[in-house]
Image 1 (cartoon, helix red, strand yellow):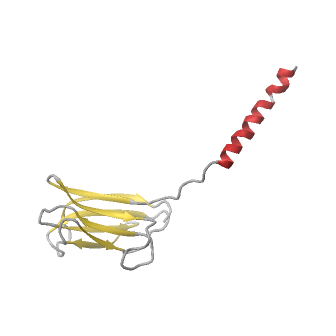
Image 2 (image 1 turned 60 degrees about the horizontal axis):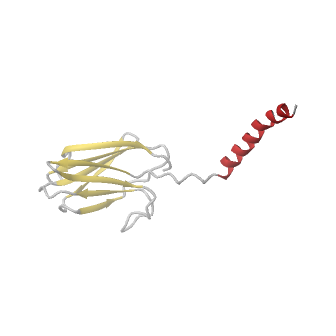
Image 3 (image 1 turned 30 degrees about the horizontal axis):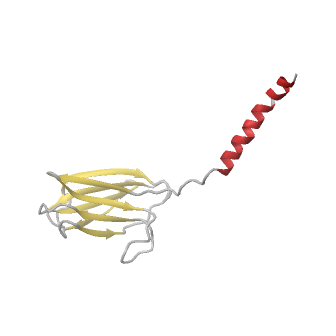
Length: 145
């Protein structure tokens, strides 16, 4: 008789214990939308475009925490051009012709939750090379904006 009596109490005890674990678990980490895309020229990375979420704001000005870093990462004689799209609309481009190891902070817009961001990085023959060449891109949906 005691076995039957305990048998129906065990699922309840387990459910209570499981609920306690869920209730006392560690909080989820803050979402982070950081992304990057790079392209290659021969055996070196030609350029890289970083999206920085949860930053302190773009260095040198700006108060929003979403910005891009356009990096020229290869001494190949070409600059790099970044282009970004927000929800399917091109939001602009930024050229970095400063040479290998240089970065430009670019803060064109704020990203909100569920926005779709497409990032593209290309090699470019100067700032007037609108399309660039040897391009690579990535697209992501913002988790937290």
